[in-house]
Amino acid sequence: MSNGDNDFVLSIRGVNKTFGGLQALSDINLNIEKGKVHAIIGPNGAGKSTLLNTCIGLLTPDSGSITFGGKDLTKSMTPHAINQAGISRVFQTPQIFPELSILQNVMIPAFAKRDGAFSFNPLKALREEEGILNEATTLLDDLGMGEGAHHHAGNLSRGNKRRLELAMCLIQHPKLLLLDEPTAGMARHDTNRTIELLKKIKESGMTKVIIEHDMHVVFSLADRISVLAQGAIIAEGTPDEIKGHPKVREAYLGSAEI
Image (cartoon, rainbow, N blue to C red):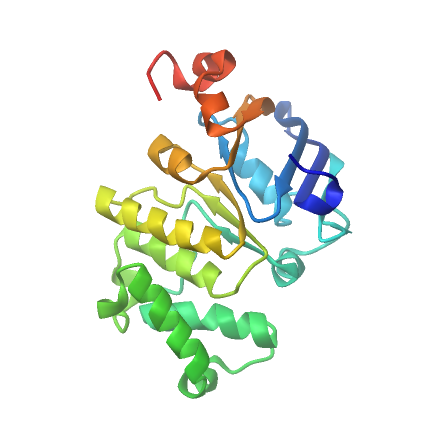
């Protein structure tokens, strides 16, 4: 168990968000512990992606606070400022540069993180920075994408675009990595490769929050799980605790074994 706020990378306190008459998030309280993998599960429409969007500045909560590194992210911080502070996000729909090569896609976020998104010449940097080139190449090899590194990213399958975006986030060395269904659209062998990479990253101490419907992924990676239903947290605990939780079975997992 944690001993205090200093154990948490991210603290969410009393967050509410409505869209018209729909209560998307209802009094969310959540602590993300340093160096851990925290999974957020729940049925479609439960508010999972909305919650992540409030953490990266794409949405502003109606009330409550989200604290990261001693800063309240709800206090006029832009998505770019939040990224520079150390939060990276893998989206449900991959955000890549389709006209560039796979390797260039991975290298550009590293330059943007190092130099500032608007203060570097990407074409010059891509030619000159050997260190970033080597790291990007290693990441792609770990993801099984090294052989096609010079192919256009726009030609990738959806599952491979998701793996590419993961590499684009990892090369920024975030303090907190938010993964929104990181294995959606992947074949099982690619899913397993991604799980192994995320396990390796876990050993480095990087904190991760994962939204995922694949329970194999969740139970392979998560240290702690929160369950959302209709915008509210209905359960939280270790994987073993969540597997047997009656509210979880009723709201999300039904009567099936997990």
